[in-house]
Length: 275
Image 1: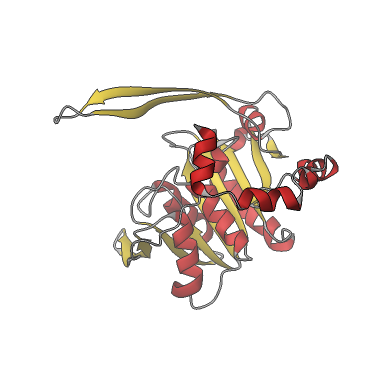
Image 2 (image 1 turned 120 degrees about the vertical axis):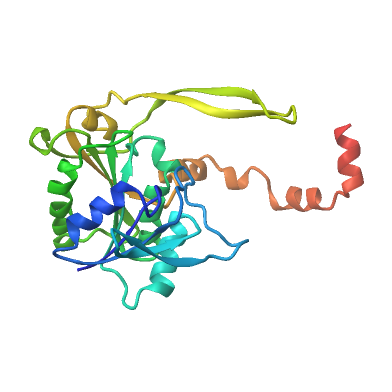
């Protein structure tokens, strides 16, 4: 298969090199990744500045293309411009640090896979539960299996997989759990500092999370030594609430006549009423 690899840790990160080495013997691999770390940029895309692309060598051989943009930029640019043929699968990772719970929203790694799903391609994000990460043996064993499963069992449209792997030897992995996105209770602290021009600035310096105790959640599976596989989608509509709001008559709370009368009020009149 033709596989596009990207990440948010940057093209020189260890994780994407490991991922390429895992898959290149059986698949055609194209690497398009940010030229510098883009962690926690979410699904940002670049449109106020130009995107520049440069070939990158690792260990003396061509490795892939570096882009001065976000992970989502890399996927869009690779598919639209850089690849001669579209990919069969897009894989983002291997990210250093788990992407579970609310981290899924912040993650550039997950957003790259989501962008691929938005463009109509099979995709998954892969992260390892450690920072820094030293043991990739579990990923080396299980990622090729996940790719084969995805090859023969395509995901529905608009869906991507968020895969998180415990940072333990492959022999200690207990298996795979299909999970839902859990919830993390964060404790965050900021370091208040003063720069040489006597201006105050803040640096996020400590972030600890309590894993979700729900046995069906992504973080719980990780904590128990299982690979967590979570199907995610980019439609953020909460359909149960949508139907509830309709039943409650939200659409009729302001009738057309009242709406038109409100629009006819001049800015000066609106201002005077608020004083």
